[in-house]
Length: 463
Image (cartoon, rainbow, N blue to C red; front, side, top):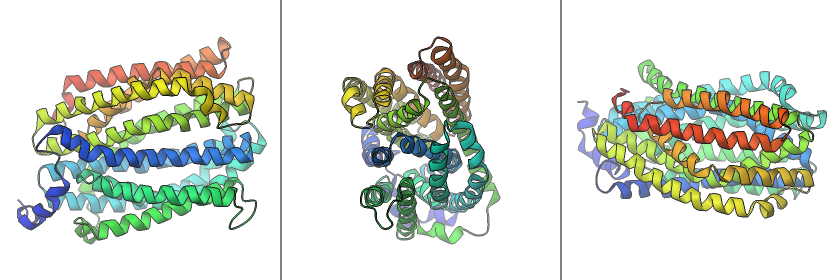
């Protein structure tokens, strides 16, 4: 046992932030879930406002914002995956009361994340033009998306710090600090959207570039605030361990995080293939705009699921570290049933309100019709999405990131895309065919994840 582990002062400081291995399971779920619920809803609200503000600029602008953000998302994936590794390593250490390892894990994750952020920004600039040429239906959308990317790609640098710092706090059992960081970013971003597009400030006629500037400004504010929160928290000693590199810790983080990166890449590239299929439909610009809008609206529903997924990752990680195996297993199902119940209600609401929601997000009749169809079709799969996402988060907290990776690759590439091609193009259903394929693949994903969770094979994985 290290001196840090044996130091009762450190244990007392950290203990109140890590109440996840004792007492009521429901209390642990509540402590983690409600701040993360508000955090993820804030994230989705920004995406929705981006698209809503872009409506003032036309369908081409809406489509360009969606495509450009999906391209940047390809690179954000690697940072989010590093955060998955951070959560697994740090939460296990906290559960085992190995605070020296927890602080080292946080420090090395910050170094790894920032290095990745710088590298990914450069790569994004080098390859974004090729990606745009593949998935942009017309020159106007390509030009707008390109101008958006030249600004928005820089968020990879501040986001690298935000992603790792918020994951570190969650792993320690503190979900309120990430809420403070993301909530502040949300306010800055939304104000920036309206000032640049509607207020023509600080420079007139920025168009989609104004939306990109707002996002970049918000992320820079979030990174500075995140570093300040880390410095003034009981995790501040991690900042003293940024150098030298600890290759063993970094390799552990990468070993867990990389499968998560491939999982998200598989999903992201399959989304680009859906865009390619929509590009071949009768009204490609309206179809692509409807995908962007539909996903933003749906995100308001599944962001609570992301919150539950993040919460259960920390809870499972800490309990496995503390050798509380049965508590970890039960917690996964407890929070999953909450998520399923919530999505039954929200899915029904999305189905019934599909028309009004669509009318509020576009002026183009074709786009409105496609969005309404997207919302009604995917509403039928929301409870299964809850099942797959939350139990998938539990698997990631247990460091089982390879199984969700393979499940995603199979359900996206062997189910969703072939079915979307057949229904949309061969049978002539257009975008509706793609929406049906998306819903069907969610059912397959949920069933496979459940089978893996019930097998309990993830309990034996070593970090």
